[in-house]
Image (cartoon, rainbow, N blue to C red; front, side):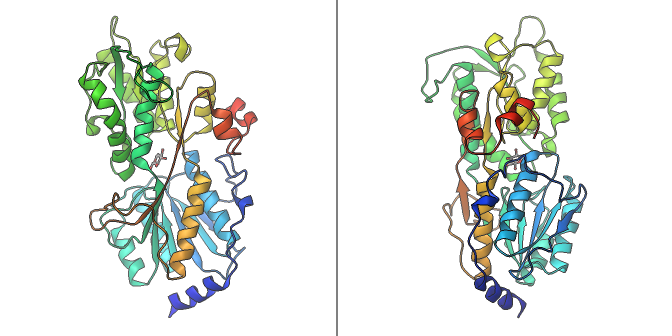
Length: 388
Ligand code: BGC
């Protein structure tokens, strides 16, 4: 039986994880080995089994860094890797996974574009004994998901909401209420409604913001406080820019001034910042530029944070997530249950998927060096240039 052979082969190889695969593996790692439309199959390793890695898009640095880190670490562990990016196109991702299955994958590591769209592929995978790891984003509506590796997505949202409050001076750096009563005008953005993470981020953020909205310290002039009103399909920067421009036109005439924006992802943050700059907001946060949050520590946003234009981002170390995915893949191939640290929160509509969740770090201008440079994620030169 094919799967048994693979298990034996996997058990036979040395599985030491090279830390070198992590160093310099930040989002700045070269993408030259993976084509823009598809991916590549490595010939470097053939004996440890075959892993299909399906990533959503190359338009965001984090997924490039994730793909590179997962591929490198799997290859170091002796696996053959088929890494594919789907240009945020749902049918393309489905076809890529079909192909991975046809080509004999033993494990699939999938960061879904639409978390509900892969049930058919996963049914086929299960019928062939192929193990499935949901990577960063939960795959929904399928029993054929063996494990989930991610960051603590609710905590990411809490960190984003807290950071907005901190930037406005409502909370101090330790998260204590300063007594500042505002009122502050804010607008709220959420991620893509088909990404399970987006609701976790939103609920985490609203858990800290809602009490201040209720007490009037925060005011949302647009009154758009529902997820569906705030959501940005496929996390598109241009869509966020357009929504921000519309909100400014409709609600910020005359003396009404915007003080802050909850943004769940750096790409959206940059769209929002462009809209603000196009509408007469200038300078830096200290001079009255609105406080804008973010996520992913993308290089262009880290530079904006260093320059005082974006207030914060949430750093998710993709190298560590890749390490968890590789560990889980090895466990599953060896017939073991990967170690989970959460077995309650990620119900995908059919079952609770055992999960391993990692911690995140809030980055502001005050800790860029410690969080991003000292850890080798970005170099200071990359940050100064704003490009990887
Ligand atoms: C990820 C975030 C990312 C977003 C947009 C989410 O699923 O968890 O880190 O910012 O997708 O790519």
